[in-house]
Amino acid sequence: MVAGLAAVAAVGGVPAAALSDGWRVLAYLLCGLALTGVVRAGLPRDAARGVLAASGAVVAGALVWALPSLAAVLLGPVTLLSDVWAGSPEGFRSALGSTLPWSELAAAPVVLALVAGLLGSAYRWWPSVVRIVAPLGAREETPKPDAASSAAGTPGAAWTAPPGAGAPWYTVAGAGARRRPSGAALRGAAGAGALALGWGALLLAGVVLDVPYAVAVAGETALVGGLLALAVRGAGSGRGAPAVPVTALVGAVSGAVSVGLLSLASEGAAYAVFGALTVLFAGAAVRVGAEVPRAVFAVASVVWGTVLTGFAGRSLDLDPHEAAPLVLLVPALTVLLGARLRRNPVALPVELTGALGALVAVGLAVSDAPFLALVLALCGVLAAGVAVRPERRPVAGYLAAALFVLATWVRLAASEVSFPEAYTLPVSVPALVVGVLRRRGDPEASSWTAYGPGLAATLLPSLAVAWTDADWLRPLLLGVAALVITLLGARHRLQALLVIGGVVLALDGLHELAPYVAQVAGALPRWLPPALAGLLLLVVGATYEQRLRDARRLKDALGRMR
Image 1 (tube, helix red, strand yellow):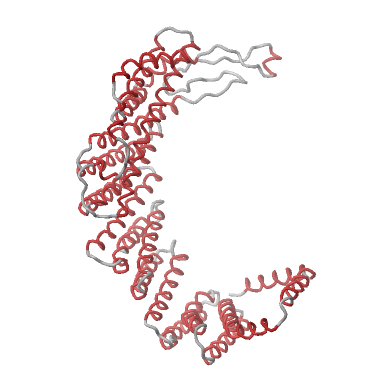
Image 2: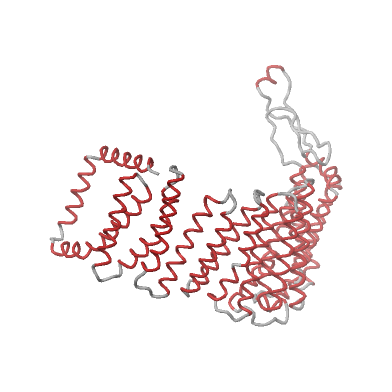
């Protein structure tokens, strides 16, 4: 190995001395690759292994030199987030905003291309590689025999050469032998490395040549399409090394993010790129056969489509809260798509991604209360649409009710309504009547379903207003109503009435008693509150088992209520 490294340094140093800084690494790389010819030189096995290790070290060093520039190409467009649609740059380098000396990195794409070509050749002609390298691994050594073989007087098993390309490189015929990586895994690693480095070489070539901005954007988008095609083909065939389609999938998603950021410099490029990405990933989701890649492609397509709706709001010169309803277009499409897919494994990831898009719309509308109420109501409509499906009803139904109620509260607060009961009671009374009729028809129905929405629609907004009301009448009426509801819940064993009424009563009483508690606490000596707290802890600790039994009985009693 040392001899091999010395040979690379000596032979490669001659042309490297005549080359510029950006090309010297290529001379050493070529010499390192030339060392792989040792497999045909008839050297002893251990000597050949050492020379091959030296070759691998040289190739690894060249990659370490070239890969940081590839990272700069992929991550450089992040700087465009601070100045979206500022105008198309002149060339690829100016769009990246990187300060790397690209003239000194001219050999980086050639280095990646050479290594990718070597790995790709190994992947393509793998049986020949196995035949050539097999003598280096067919080491005739006898491992320690196990007890059975010692008793029988037979030696341990020896390493055997592989029978073919699809078999493991080293098969073990007896106990005590070590297992080696299989040929299929090594071939897959070679193919994945060739694909990743070849993709990186093409990206770096565009930067080194400083191609025009439009060519760079179009080229990166085309590369994403090629990677998607490889991922779909590899995942659908079910043959070959799984590492190659997985690498293509990861590269496609990473490249899509990179080219999407790169397109933010120009409005037209942004629409073209994200529109193309939406179509490409949607097409890949339709064509691929495996479930996991299909889910990844479908989710990515939903994300790109959501970004497009955000661009539409910016093009129309809308404020963020005004653009929020536009962002809900993609979640609405995911609801329709989920109804179409139904129990397909892809349906849930697509719907969850649409829900995240709806959450983004809510975040955009937070700065304006009327628009926030509108967006919440629209989200409630979407959730109600999802609740039509039986498999989604337990979650989506409650979510829709909560969104509608929350939208009502936000609308009332935005209108600065000081008497919300005038708007909530006309809703709560019919809702409670419907709940009573539901319980009569189905005595086993949950009280939360029958009475929960009606009670929450009035009690919670009234409680929020009571906490900011300096008058005494509203808290008094609210406390009396909450007490009556709590007693009715205890009398008829209705969990929703007992819990909602008890919580509202406790919070209302806490608000009313807080000033007096503060006055009493201020008049007491400072040592008394800690002493009372310590006494309380002593009492609780002394009766811990009894309190625990009481808590369990309370839990069981609540659990038995409807």
